[in-house]
Image (cartoon, rainbow, N blue to C red):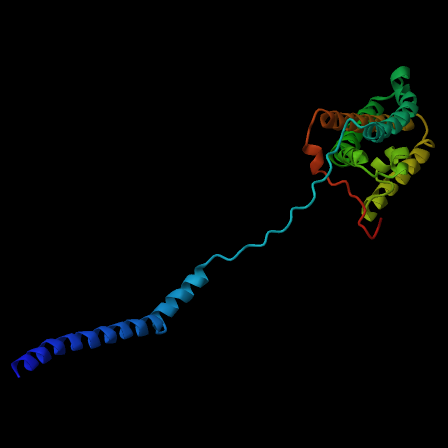
Length: 242
């Protein structure tokens, strides 16, 4: 009939719209659940690779306790060495002054006298003491201000500062060789006749005086806050040598 035909004509579009709606919803759901395309996967992988990784930082080493130049032990170590040198200077000076008091040298002997003083002042005083030994003495003396220093290091501080013990094997060898060499030279020089003994002693006095002054100068600079001495290697023993 006309009414039935009209109803079928009205319901058919509604039925098609309903089926289309469900079909569209199902398509949308499938797209949402579908795996990502290959390009998207590569993009995500690159993003993960570009993510910065955490960096492990090593723990900073423990700070070394500050050195105290005003410590009594430091002064005893540095100035004790000066005292040893001053004792030798005091014993050699009277012999070295004899030609000056007598005024009996020839012109050649006076040239030898002055040349001996210049030679020892440069070789012994400047090169040996000021450039090498004096900084080592003050630097090792500064380590006496560190905590847990053994008591015998305090008692024998001048000899410790000279590197005669509790030092690297090389330093002990050098220090003992120099000490024994100096005593041997002094014993041989005592056998020289006048004025040659006085000529040699004048040079030794000049070298030792320069060396003593350099130790005092470096120690005073450390007292005034100088940091250059800290760059000197104290030549301490390795753990297996200690």
